[in-house]
Length: 145
Image (cartoon, rainbow, N blue to C red; front, top):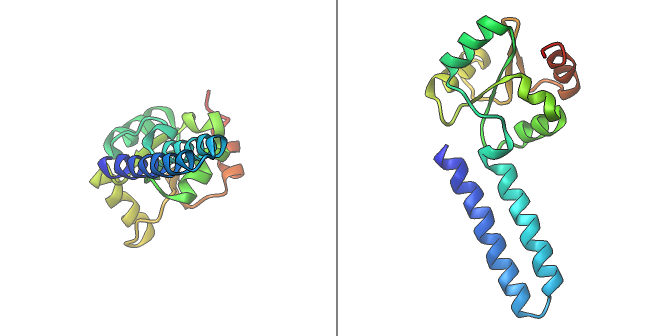
């Protein structure tokens, strides 16, 4: 989790540096636009853009109770960000596990993928799906209220 906050903080710091340099050069509007762009990038790379992550054991227990899928992800992963954005509000109907914050989650992904930590990896009805099509997953998530 700390790694993702560092990445987001770095993006924000670079944005501030670029905006200050632009502002000093007289480009006030461009400076604001650049700062906003870097702030949005920092948000996307932070854990804030994703639903609250659970530990793998918690997610598996909740899945046993409610049948919802588990989505293994990691901050900074463009495929995870794409999936999250395409799922929209339906993404909150799944249990999310940050593999950088949970070694058991990383081990679960390695077991599914044959040793790699390829994310996003989704467990749905006991079946693993590596980097699934967001439209397909969104349709399955809509069955959960």
